[in-house]
Amino acid sequence: MPHTPIIGTLGYILSPEKDQVLMVHRIGREDDLFLGKYNGLGGKMEAGEDVLSCMKREIFEEAGIIAEELHLRGTVNWTGFGKNGEDWLGFIFLIERFSGTPLKECAEGPLEFVPINQLHTLPMWEGDRHFLPLVFDKNQAPFHGHMPYQGGKVMGWSFERERGKHFATLSV
Image 1 (cartoon, rainbow, N blue to C red):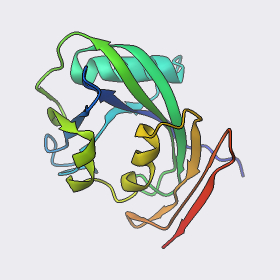
Image 2: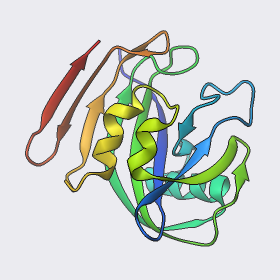
Image 3: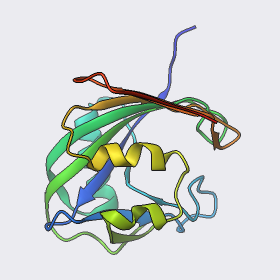
Image 4: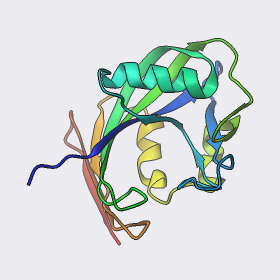
């Protein structure tokens, strides 16, 4: 049976000083699967879009800014992640330059720049803690990971890098 995940993008927008990242505090919608959690910006890819166009559109829609320098940091195959156990394939970007002034709030909740070294203190998906260090590390090789979920909980984590073939696993 073919794997047909929902395709989405997730972006982490650096401050001009490169020491903070724009996050959304998902408190805007009661039915939000992410309610109460902090997350990067992004969403589902639409028909007729490529992943880069999707990421740029989502950033503009959610933050009101234009992404000018984007780097694909990796991909994650989240099996069983969605509200009803849907599979997701996410393209993770680091946005190092943008134009405009970020909105203070979007439909999902308030937007705020958070020091990168404080991300670990925020309420977020448990799984984000595994791949976020790879988004901000100095290794420029993209990572490609698999993170199965069951009942809203991470069941494992593995990834490889294109160069250097780094491989790590987590079993829960």
